[in-house]
Image (cartoon, rainbow, N blue to C red; front, side, top):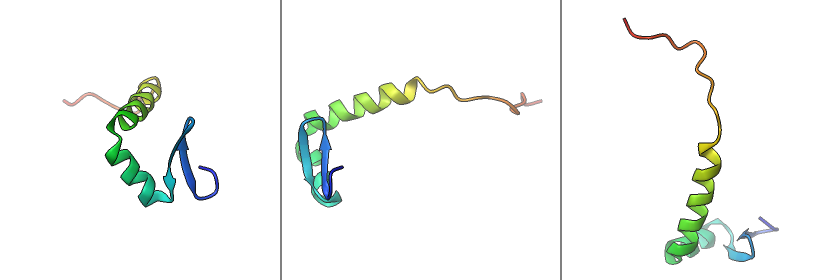
Length: 56
């Protein structure tokens, strides 16, 4: 985000949240790239399972 502009890499998504959302709705290829990148980063995060016990 730069000022009121949202960008993804070199692509300007729009000025303001609503215009950025509309851009992503109309440009599914950019949306897919962004989603793939986010999911790739989130998938590598390890979540601790401390305090979880098995059901009896």
